[in-house]
Image (cartoon, rainbow, N blue to C red; front, side):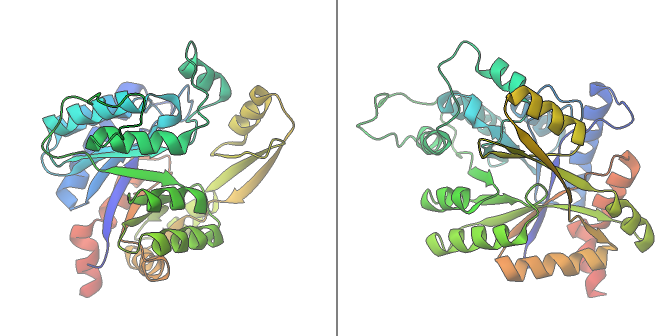
Length: 334
């Protein structure tokens, strides 16, 4: 196998599922992923959301670690623009002490919610969330105890200090975030399930590999597999993403148009909405593997983190089972 396969789960709301039901599905999917040979299982962070229940990855990760035995479990990711890098480092040092060599710390720049939720997360603090690059650098220093002597907080330790440090992954969707990860010599995850422009993916991959040739370049990608090719195509037709373009220059991505409109209204500035094809990879397992092989060759991706946005619990599980490393590569060989 020339690349690894992993899973990103968001504990989605399916048929008005309760948080209890959604989290039980997440636990079951993590256990299934472990049995099927997936490399890692990541959970996301979204706030005040009508679509997904996962708002606190650190808490969910701790439970998933206790319910599994070998698979790596991590955040995809912590929205560090809201938080103290020092506290994030402490949280993941605790997790890494509880489950050595099984914890991943993915960090992202996205707000993870609408403006009102962002205000709530930052309420009563001096945090503006505008210094993402600085925060990632400080997080790395806290985790590895390499805070420079000229830093105003030099001498502080992010305790406890685990024997195996949690690896940090930068999540993004632009050459800028790829450059940051490469310069810090950190693994980079390009979120193609949100940023579907493969020219941006190409530029990001080239930027990362040029600066950090031996780095770990990963692609988070939307997929849906079915033994029924027509079913896969029909489901993929209905898979869209919504781009919200604010007059200030920011662009945000949503799965539903009404949520993009709500964000635009809360942002308090003129905006435009664009509906795009999600470019979901779909088809039989063999067809999807062929597409992943192509991405692997084009962008030198070492790993794919698979995300299935299909809001049907049974079909989501079946898709991940069909694409499992333990049988997908064997099927293709036979």
